[in-house]
Length: 126
Image 1 (cartoon, rainbow, N blue to C red):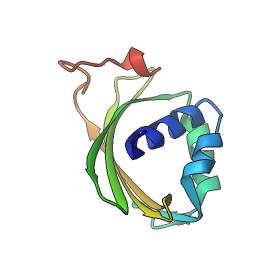
Image 2 (cartoon, helix red, strand yellow):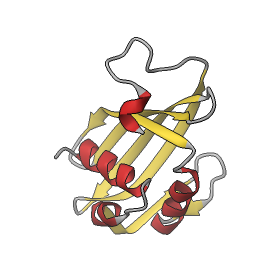
Image 3 (cartoon, rainbow, N blue to C red):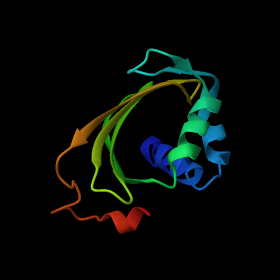
């Protein structure tokens, strides 16, 4: 399984309430800083955030943007389930001892449905 596949699988399971794989792929020293607020948070905070929006948001496929021995950058699309609101995301990850130790995510609002004309649809990810 690639790093992107492991990351995607971990958070898809987490959105269903199963954080087992998340716990396996994250380093105990994990810390992240919210790019909007500058507030530092830990894995428990990330889990709480995902749990709070899991029923409202669908995350599309993840694409690897770049990867090296110590870093990974992935790109998913997302949409709100009951609204025509779409986002494009980018998550930059660094590794320590083979596990995720830092992560920064940014989101950009889109004025179009990114699944249109693609070989995937939102129903594949609900």
